[in-house]
Length: 226
Image (tube, rainbow, N blue to C red; front, side, top):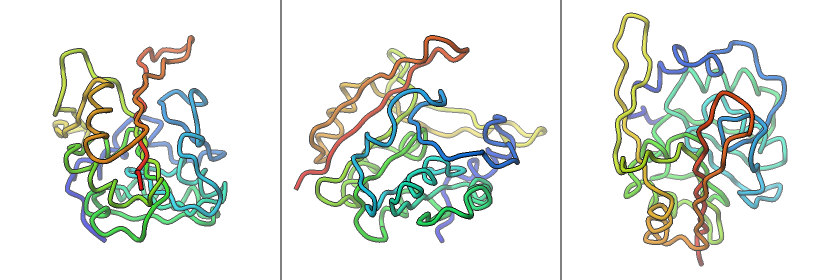
């Protein structure tokens, strides 16, 4: 068990948005790349078959991971929040094939539990880790032909590279400051190609036509050659 580098994520779920703090378990598993439930592509992005190994970087309360396990994947998740992992274990205790680890994503990737057929991050650790560190680590953890995919908010025009985000803590504490990495889609394509990925795509998924949230989602995907 490797202690996470980003302590703010340990308390964030307890004090964050209602979707993350709800005590009741969700009724069913589901998989999505966006913050709009039921909108956009699903597991087909990962090109997995039952029995394949998949790693979620920043699995949170585990809904995506549990869905993959329920489909027959060998699903491994790592998250820096012990609170979220406890919730995942509670919510999905009956799901077979789901393995959870508390710790830092880069530290986990440095000593993976074997090659993975897919690695993904949905507004997770890939959003808050420098690409120069993350991409070679993911590439090394993937089996030849394995897929890496990540989703996050699209970059604000002109605000590229390392940016600052505020993460809620206790009611009497100032928010913590954490880093995220924002780039336009063509830059993500270049970054993945420079680190050995092939068939790279970076697309903006528009939001649903109806709803309060009007921000789309950037979905980046690449395949390890070999």
